Image (cartoon, rainbow, N blue to C red; front, side, top):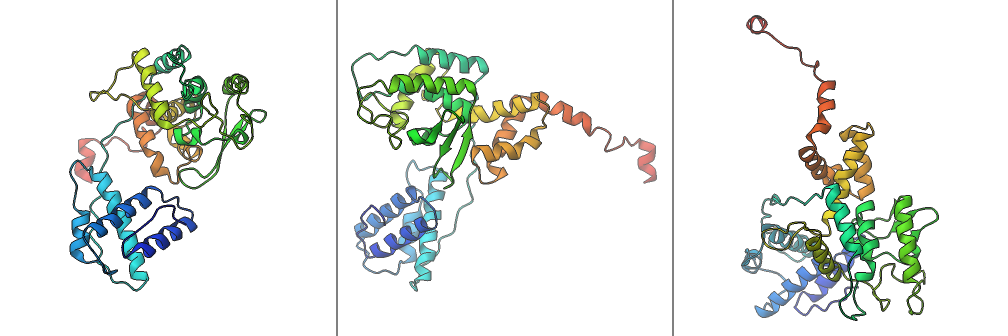
Length: 333
């Protein structure tokens, strides 16, 4: 069942639609907020008929002030799915045109190996300036190393429970991830030692049940779950101390860029071990939890741009596929 309250005349249909989506395995959290916003829109416009008019739909799908094309696209996709559901329920509904999918011009920040070393060094030197027991500083050295060494998302890392890490077999269990799949993530001996050190100090905290299998792996000093926002604030301080330049807007590289960095560095390492860039593509795509090769394509292209020498060997392999044709031969064809 939906954990939010819909109040418009279409409240029952909103709730049943969300329940249907979740029964099919979709998390449907952001979409639920979108539909809740639409529900409030119907209330403010005194809409009292379950059949939605074209005027109502067109006004709601108009681009808003300071709204990105991608956000508007996602909003319209969500409402189109709901309108088709209404049609299946026998309620007529006009379907708005879906705009062209906006191309992203965003380029993730790929750290050099020297910058990664500087991040880890500055992370280890962090000190708590006050006695804020809610701080996530305690987890930063282990967490950042895990993100870079495994390529998992920050949300996946913060969702880990104690039962999800196996230090003996050296793997993580990610449950109900972005694409509603469980994944097993192996990790190295080096990361194993880092995690063992973190757990030794964490388990010494005076918190009852801190090592309970169902409790969070990464916690504050009070034993509560860490938040992504708190991690991001400490990460920004790490970047400043490591002298890694911020963007023009002052926000700088993101924690999520460690995942992008893992992918590109993995492609380079596989190439150094003699594996073709495009042959390693499916393996890394599966490891990252992508549903298709297209989702991993950005990493392939980004790696090509950053490390063009990786393709030199491939170019030599195919140099004789198309023969050189002289001008005389061209005239006789």
